[in-house]
Image 1 (cartoon, rainbow, N blue to C red):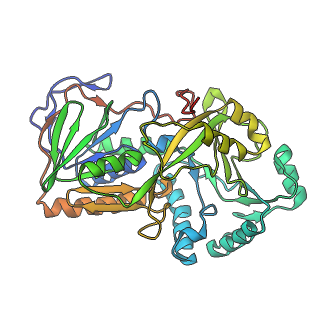
Image 2: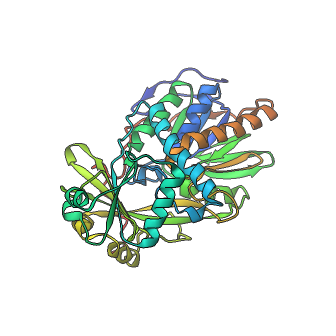
Amino acid sequence: MAIKSLKYVERDGWYSMSMTRDFSFVIVGGGILGSALAALAAGYGLQPLVLRRSDLLSPNADTLRNQGWLQSGIMYPISHFSSPEAYANFAAKTYFAGRDLLAMCNLPRPEPGGLLGVSADFHIQQLARKRELLKLSDYEFAQLEAAEAKRLMGMHYEKGSTYYRIPDGPFNEAAVLCHFRDEATRSGAIFIEVDQPVELERKNDSVRILFADREILSPTVVVTAGAGSFTLMRQCGVHLDGDLQRTPLVVGDAPSDMPASIVVDLDRGFSAVRHDRGPGGAAVVMGTRAKTLPAPDPAERIVAVSDQAEFGALVPPAFQSSLASGRYTAGYEVMPKRGLGPSAYEPWIRQEGPVIFGSPGRATVSALAAQKLLADVIERWQANRQQRTSAVDLAGCSEWNCPIAMHYMPTYDYNDAEV
C-alpha cells in the first residue's frame, strides 16, 4: 500500500482531509458482483478502489432493483442451454451456490415453500423433466393434490390449474451486498460513491478513469456496472456481443392472503416475491414476461404505457389490487447473444487487455463469478509485475458506507411508469 499522506479523517461519510494514494486496480460498479470481487481481492491482499453511482433518489444498481429470489433453476427454460445436461449442471449450481452464498454471509437459508401454478400440458411435461434432471426430492418439489392446492391458494386458486410446491424462496440481497462491502473495507478496499457516471478511456495497456472531477490511470479495470457496462466497454473500444433487456417490475403492498413467499403462474409468465419492509408491512415485487429486448437507453428508466398494459394483462386477478396501488421500476438485464457464449443466466466474463467485463447472470452465483474475475485480475497483476494505479487525492469524495435499502423499502417512492 503506497500512501503519500496518512493524515485524513472520515466525517459524515466524506473524506475531509488529504488522502492521496494508489491502488492495485479499479472496479467500476458496486453492485453484488463488484462488491463480492472487492471482498475477495482485499482478502487476497490487493487494494481495490470501487466506484459506484449513488442510489440516493432511485437505485442505479440493478441489484437493488432485483426481486431477491433464491432460485432452484425450475424457472430456467431447458431450451436456453446447449443441452439438458448443461441446464441441469447450471441449475444445480444456482441452487447450491445460492445457499452457500447466504451461508458465507451468515444469513439464513429460506425453507422450500414457493408455490407454482400451471395449466398448459407443455409446461407440466417440462416440470416433470426438470424435476428428473435436478433430482429434486418430494420435500423440495411436489405436485399438490387438488384439495391441498385449494386450501393453500385460497382466493388465489384458479380452476383448471395444477399447483406445485417448489424449493425457491426470497433472500435479502441488501444484506448480502452489505456483507461483501463490509468485508472488503475491513481488508483495505475503498468504495467511492459518485453522482455522475464514470468515464473510461483506454490508453495502450492501461485505462484512464474520470470520476468526481478526478482522474486515475489503472493497469487493470474491472467493469461490473450492470446496464452501464455496455457504454463503459464501448468507451474502451470493446464491443460486447450482447444486449440489454428491460424487465419491468412492480412494487406494491403484498396481498394479506398471499399464500407463499413466492407465487408463480407459469402460463402467464408471472411471479410475485414477498419481502418484509419493517413497519411498512410486507411488499410484493411482481414480474411478468413483458420484457423489451434490445432495451432503450437505460438512462431513461421509463416503463412505457404500452409495456404497462402488457404487464397488467399478465397479472392474475388476486394481485390486481397490488398492481393498481404499486409503482413501476425499470430493471435491466445484461443478455449475451444466444449461441455465442454463456446463457443469460450464467456468469459472463470477458477480458480485453487492461479491461475486464463481468456480469453474474444471477445474483445467486455472484460469488462464483467473483472468483473467476479475481483469477483474471491476479493473472494480469502478476504479469504486470504488481504495477499499481497512479495516485489520486480522495479528499472531498463521498465514501459509500450508508445503509443499503432495496427498491421495495419505504426509502424509495420513485415510479418509472410513463404517464
